[in-house]
Image 1 (tube, helix red, strand yellow):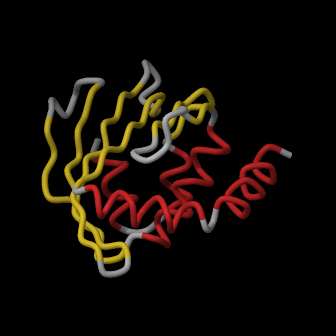
Image 2 (cartoon, rainbow, N blue to C red; image 1 turned 45 degrees about the vertical axis):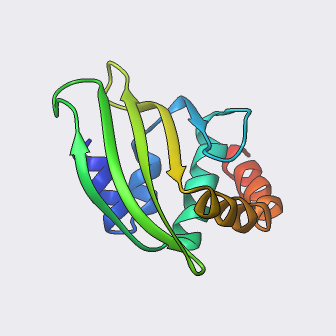
Length: 132
């Protein structure tokens, strides 16, 4: 999805948030339970944008006009390099209603989990502020 990729690459997280459907479901690479809803998904994406360093998309997979997209990326968390993929589904309105992220290797996923866990309280507060 070109608009999502461009917004992420520009670090324009408000533009990323505008692409999310209200009923979006975010599936984390390091937490089993999915996160439903735009507020929590936006809060997580805002936080991960601060955690990832040297982030860049490497390639896109899928039909640009279809509902399913895969964006392969590389990044760093602290001294750990990782590669990953954003799997995106868009609804009939063109908004993201499903976003699943996968990363590798395990050491990179663990570094990401630690960095995001350290921010979880502020992520939860950010999500609550977006709701109310």
